[in-house]
Length: 143
Image 1 (cartoon, rainbow, N blue to C red):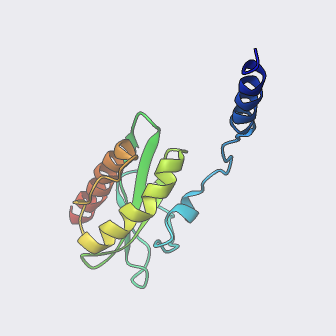
Image 2: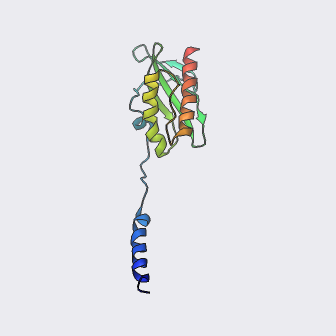
Image 3: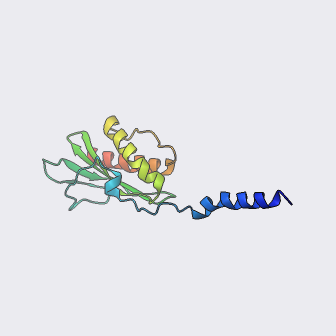
């Protein structure tokens, strides 16, 4: 009985931080998730087609919308000639791992200049959807 009270008090004291824990409720935005992208005119762009937005901004192409288990993924790619100059997420799952993965995926895309980018740990499903939508945009640009 002498040990029961300290054990009970320490157990409650250890559980208080767990009870008080609140996950962050911040809602990610696609603009904040892709700082490497540049604003561009989107009028007249088809769902998975391309649209010229002027010679100064380059060619803007939307990738297909890929429905994943976590939610839809769609990218918009800006080209200057054959070079990828910007990638913007138009749709992405509302998930912390996705929000953290998007800047890394965009940076790797700009470096690789292709859809051959590594999967981001913890965001495998989003990475796969990103690559598929990105490849669709690259293919649409080439057509």
